[in-house]
Image (cartoon, rainbow, N blue to C red; front, side, top):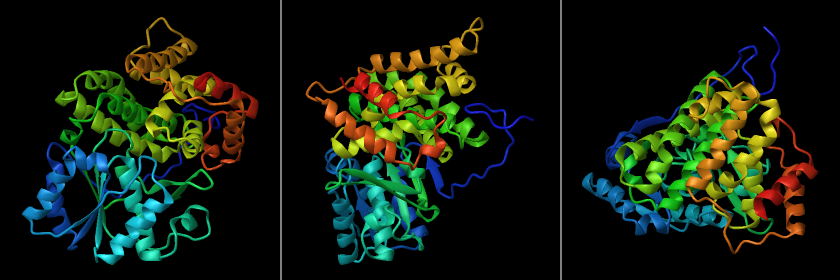
Length: 395
């Protein structure tokens, strides 16, 4: 067998895959939280969420489950859409002050990420940025964490880490460890029925970016490939349906599954889309899913020469591969399908967002220095190529 080639399957197999989280998937599974708390032997959870989740009435579903089991709780809802170091610090202070012994992350990726950050500091002390910048290692498991997603996108319920923004340096900082996997993920598609159409689109496209980047990563492997392909298939088939009819049960269930599979595909590693999303998201308050959606087709075009075989396979899952197409045409059709999906979902740059050339240059410089995902890139991008691409996206 030949040596590995970028973006293909022609390589020797040698891989590991590990997700210890117990996954419970299905309608009304979120209502099992009280029982799960008792099974874990804990007594008082801190619910980490945000005001949007509370205003949508979703936190009440959770607290009713806890009250039914006679379990006291506290709520920390000061989590921003792009969570900050201060969010983790404030949440940790509350966790310690009120004597809670476990955590429930309820919401999109932001509350779930913050719940893990609180868990890290609760057992180690110090500040979360110390664990992002390599000054300290995560050596102890956090208190038990239950993750309950309310969007179908981030896959954070099966993530062993998190992302927080330093508002001073404007950098998105990543922390992670195999010790940080949630004990249990309660995945309840019914929690997404009231999700607005634009958030349905952005979060679904975030899940798509996880699947595509995991699939095309240099560290991808057969298990990741299976999860990624199924996630792409489900999203391409169901996202537009859910966008137009949020109460379509089959569509919501399929997207929740796709988000989970996309999260599991992230074990293959993320790529340039997320490098740029982290850099840009640290400088401007652009929702992460929208950021990824805008960048994804442009990065796919760049990666195509190095990932032709795999991108042709994605075209099959996107439903656009035809028997008379050669590999190149299939790969190109896959990119076109993603562009068409963005149009169908009315995904576009906010009208009031103006990005000047100097800002683009700063983003490029920061992205070239951001090395976390670089080993996964199927094809490197020069600074000039990156600047040209960002002009196309943000002008």
